[in-house]
Length: 245
Image (cartoon, rainbow, N blue to C red; front, side):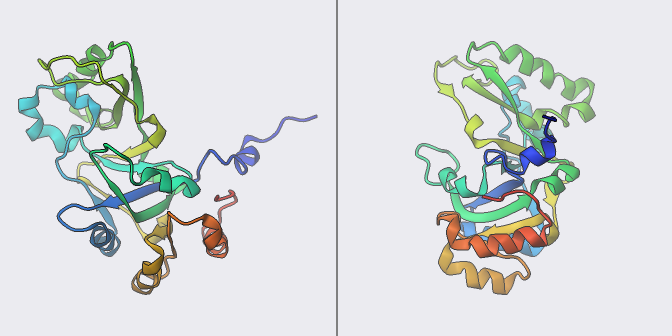
């Protein structure tokens, strides 16, 4: 029997998604308004909110001046489309995501430079030296530093700021299957052709589809069978061969 072509195998791997999802949250505006602004500008912007775990290897008093470039990014998840609901209403999370967002075509975002997070295993509390070494690139090779520092995340023992007191709490967000994008402009530009479907509560779908044609919208909380016909249409428009749910 001949070996199988991996591209054909991937068409039926339900655990591997052909999408990257960006969900919005309530900030100064509510999550719906944030999604509308994203669609109007066709741009995902990020502020100087340092969340890369690499920040713990850099002097905290200097982060304000470099945070955008080295420790901030736009965040996506590779979670399969029928599992997006599992990202919502999670207890004890600092960022509470809402059922509004966009499902992007992964292949198109790869071309734009979106990359998987680099997860470091810190269960033995042995990665702070590595993180500090990576942060030294900020002073010696800043162009190289910005290509890796925004994508660092640890699981296992939490990292703390330099001179901080060690704690024994564990952390593990590998289940989010996160991807990120960082740029000098602190934003990610896209067009509607990069989007597979939009996400919003079911009773708001008509409003969103009327305001942002030709995008189709689904409710990530509902069973995807509700939207089988719509998903097939979106799949054909995107020329996707993958099974989408």
